[in-house]
Length: 527
Image 1 (cartoon, rainbow, N blue to C red):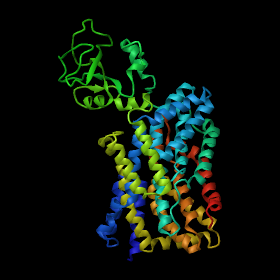
Image 2 (cartoon, rainbow, N blue to C red):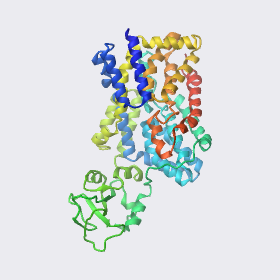
Image 3 (cartoon, rainbow, N blue to C red):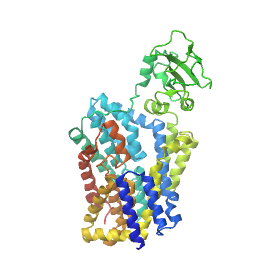
Image 4 (cartoon, helix red, strand yellow):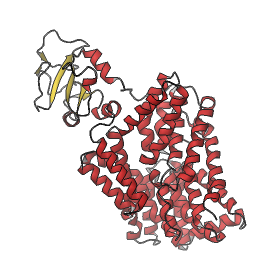
């Protein structure tokens, strides 16, 4: 059995395992790379070379930048500005949020944008009297379109750009993707507004993300907190860029049980202040209270102190300070530093002054060094399954090309669609990408199809640029199932969606992306 046949068999097994969806995608990707090593198609060094690939490091750095934008309140600030600009008009408000979803996806990837905006969209749905199920799937689909606005909007864009450079036609420019991204984003917002009320269910979810936008007023009312000074009003005084408050519950067997506390006292660390104590929903008659299991204590301190001191088994935190800060403190601590680093990062990518991987790593390190986020946040921000998936499949993608498997598949595609029509080739690639995208991640689909697309382009003697851009658009069209992308999965619970809701609403979006990938792309990048 030759190397090309072995590679195709390993690929077929990997795709089947992706569709089966019982094993972690990272395990499948690594297993495929190691299987090619075990069969002699690749050496062990070649099978593991993906972990040193600049593309993988660049994508990991994007997750860190996404976390910084969200954690420092930049996304909260942007959302509040849009809500204010809508001036109470429900349609305008929904339009603004969908546009924000597309723009955020360009900066922090679709999954990051959806995760950041779901709580705000749930609040907006409540305020305008609509079910969240009418708005959350449009939010995710708009983010998919927004991923094509700039180079860094999606790992697929980066893979397509690198493949174009390897093919000798140069990288795609940082804003070049906007030529297809803008019509896709505009079309997606239009479809969402036009079809959302008709095609999406009116269904309540079993659980929704907490609405913390009025958290300060809620705490002020519950605990009857008085202003600290005439210059600072409650509830505004409870949450600032430097200081916040947190509710904690004393759990059974806590070492704090029996400890005497009173409002105004400083905790043992000296970093937190007790603002109030409640037992069974009421304040104790005596100011000096011996803590008992079930008591609720309201603590004030710096955000860093709240994060550090409440991460222990002594208390149960009602609402994590990090979650509260992201919703109630726009442009919080580190926001300006994050915006400056982000702007310099975009300028570096747009001008090409340094390689993309270097720009991403420098930006990620700068965010940690400048204190916008800490080291632990940076590690947590990286989606390691995604990183391992890409690192594992890059060698597989390379093997598809070097063993001649891509030429074989490309030849079959050319035979099927006929050698005279590159448009039919784009259509065939889109259909294959859409079929894979039902159950396989768009990144994995891109890694499988890119070498095939390049081989088919060579067979037809056409430029690889329109073919690669069409593949990027096709891979972003992940609308038909909740397991297609993490963004689709994120909205499933809060929206109360079922499996069939996705294909019913997603088919018109799939049609839009098909038109752009097959008909518009060749007009912008000539064959």
